[in-house]
Length: 510
Image 1 (cartoon, one colour):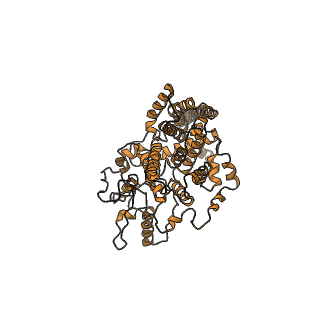
Image 2 (image 1 turned 90 degrees about the horizontal axis):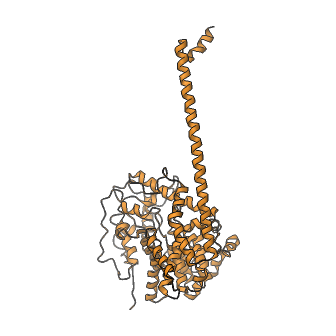
Image 3 (image 1 turned 120 degrees about the horizontal axis):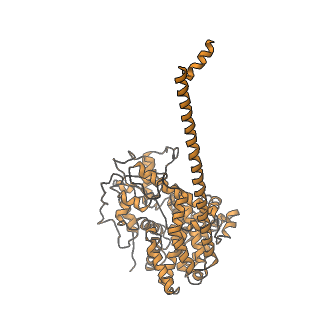
């Protein structure tokens, strides 16, 4: 029996409920008691996919509904119960706003209202359907993206020293779209699965758009970097000869969407602020569940798999979710222990579908945190970006009188000590086991880079410590000189009966 899903369509002759005016996918909430004051109209028309808050909004339920084919309408669903926690109203879309950004729009309020309504209605008959590549344009125009230096880089996309930052600049900020499309095409998956080129392009454009460019780390460039790393892992001999076309398709899509709509703060922050997403997913893999359901929403919105049998499409969505959920860092030890047990017992069978899927999960986990294993020039940039995102969260927590999360205090941590700790306790154990599973040149290269990078951060830490120690004696010496000068001045005043300021007066008198 074919399962159908249809979003409710509102009659045009009825008033539009407030919650419908939110942008699609944007968990959007308004409140008169917001910490940021009255909502800014410019914020209300922000990008689709941004996480924000409103006690009467049911957009979150629609995202959840997209992930459950048993739900066919909004009947029976009640609004999420809003907690009384005073920080629920923090709007993540304003966290990284820079001064001077977003000039006041000259459009009228009714125009903005219509725009948001069309966005929620999925732009069924508007320009959203034509975003990316219009259907009227020949498909060969897609290949025009692969020109010049960007195309030269794609020829070496399997190299571990692939510079994703340079590639993002060469593609004018479209690294995720360009890279993922190229890899899907290179594997022949577009033709094999009979994917509609326009639907695929629209899907990739919307995926890239749903990453928050204001996040220092969790943005579309990070997703592109993880996708490139995933490609490198899937080319390893053990995987290359075992993975099916379906495995490869899922691996690439999971890598591209694994952090979709990331708000730039971590799960503990969402939990301690009583964010409704934490309630929705019961404080378990909160962000990862949201990334998965957001990805499923885009798959269904674009109809990328609509031509496949319903059962196959649902299986793809479930397995995609299983891969994305594996990136939850709080479950690191669970996956690592299972991986280690398989290796110890030597019972990993790549002809077994469940074992292949588990290896894909481990590959995605490695790809997600592979930054310490990149060459120093790349690894250092990623380290600085992720640490800056931590520190920004800490500043938000301080601003709202919240307990500052570990590693998020700019005054108590440095990039170096955070990275050394991460490599020691998280990255090294994982990549050591991966090297046991796939003992190849790439695995040894990654471990080598990580060792060098760890030593480099250690050296920088020692330099900073030495500079600090040198600064302290000089400061102490300057203070001692000031004290001595003040003592000499006081002595002169006592002995001569006049102060130093009186000496010039005596000179003038004589």
